[in-house]
Image (cartoon, rainbow, N blue to C red; front, side, top):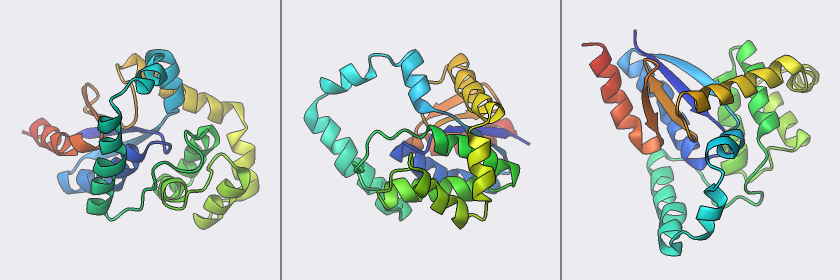
Length: 204
């Protein structure tokens, strides 16, 4: 069975799009999906140090097209609500992404991550706030006290750091990054058709 690794941070709208479709894609193609929560800010700090300077010099028409039209075209196609920009942008997603590991312990990572994406991009809520996370945790039937204790624990912190470092070490530079059978890398929501074809190729 082919393996698909999905490196993701809920602070990216393009990742929200890819997340929305990756489970069904893997189920349809008979691939094992491995969730890999990361902190995309950590990736940027390590390999994209000039990113924010470059953004300041981008063509404003091109930037407006991607953020206002292209993103909304994809959101409409996927029937998702994506507000760009959210009131808090960029957002500190570290606690939310640590929480993905806690949710995974109870086999609730997909439901939890979708709730985080929905809260931030659909409902314009600040996912760095404990009260917002508490609502998300309750929605997916996780214990709030245990959740907040665990996201502050060294093992959970280490897991997020390890995944982030792993992505950097394997040549990744952002979210979402998808690997088929470990070495075949794809970046971005619009590469999902290529991911599908890669899965099929690996089964021949």
